[in-house]
Length: 169
Picture 1 (cartoon, one colour):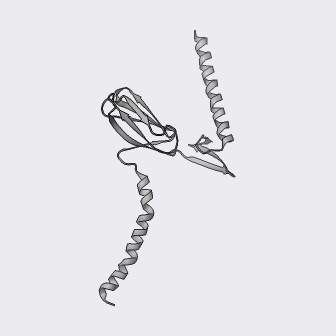
Picture 2 (picture 1 turned 30 degrees about the vertical axis):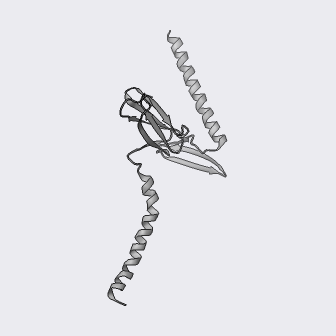
Picture 3 (picture 1 turned 90 degrees about the vertical axis):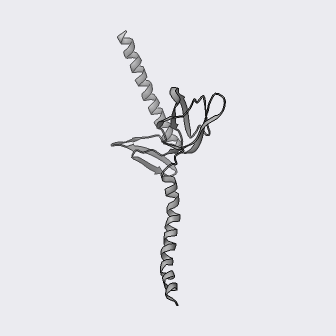
């Protein structure tokens, strides 16, 4: 064996190891940071984005993933509704495309605890005390109970505010 073949053999495991590590880490690196043309928003949160030009119409690819609302001054409100990616197209009054961008909706950023009871799932937000948090994918009974409680609380708060307003008049 020549000296050059020994050097190649010594280097080969390192290059294969580097290649293997690169292949394993590539999906994480690709998903870690959205591209410049991607708007990243968390589910159940909103983000304001300034658009160029005079936008008259907004079309959203999948409104189950994100909602886009046009405000005055070319500002849009992007709200994450479900996990995944979709796009939106903004057009001017002549129908010309001004913007075509991807919206990436990601999971919540708070301390989310997920409890599995067989196939049923419950989610809790633990900041600083754990409380129910309705999250896509939760079990139907848990989801309905949490939504019903939130609706009841909202109705009671609205009723109290209305009663307080009448008492002042």
